[in-house]
Image 1: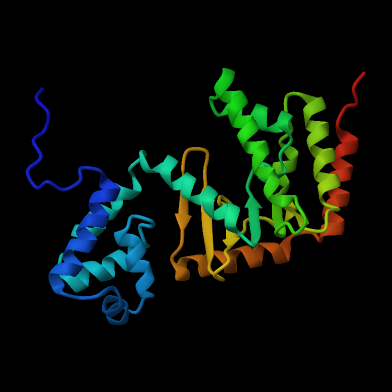
Image 2 (image 1 turned 120 degrees about the vertical axis):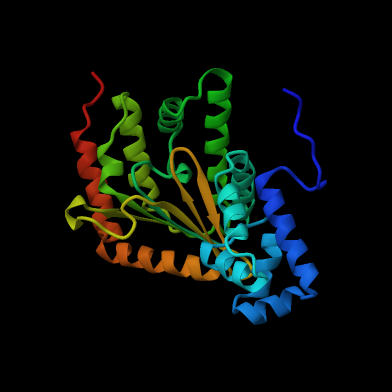
Length: 278
């Protein structure tokens, strides 16, 4: 089958095409980014990031743009294609990593996996292997993940707070020795001055983050961004209103979690249940 002929000369990549259309429509209207922000009621810098492809924006923002440009459903359709474009995940994760390195504080919630910043090499290897990595690639991924933990070291490391669902601590490893090492590492790390660990007991029942693994990064410019993740993809969220909604959910979950002291005792009790090496 002959390759599809490009007629418009515009990008055929969903994310880039979406950004191009946003920029083209605004330019055609003769509006500046600041004027667009004032007209629609969002921070004008959000529209600039959308037009540069740094963020997709929320559906509410895109619907407002469709109304403003009188293009009912067109931009929302392009947004849906951009969101579903799997080729963007690696690029999006690279941007998240650069922001993580700049963060002045980090807050996290774990649904079922210990966060990468607190994983031991044995834990990281088994989890990554379950995700399909093997051979040299597996070794490289483990080294890269453990290397990230340098962010919590140094003379003035950023504060890191994580809430671990009880399910995270109940799902041990096949290798009991590696699982013991992971629990020991968590118990020891909980005593570091810049690390706070909470455990969310299963007894609290359903909650606002029941299926959402999330990291909040507070940046040097006082902005906070969020990164939600599943086993197959991640979403970097920078729009202020969306981040604020997620932070409120996080605060509600933290209110239900055990205190740091109680959480460390919880980890130590689990450690006692792990079989010792013969």
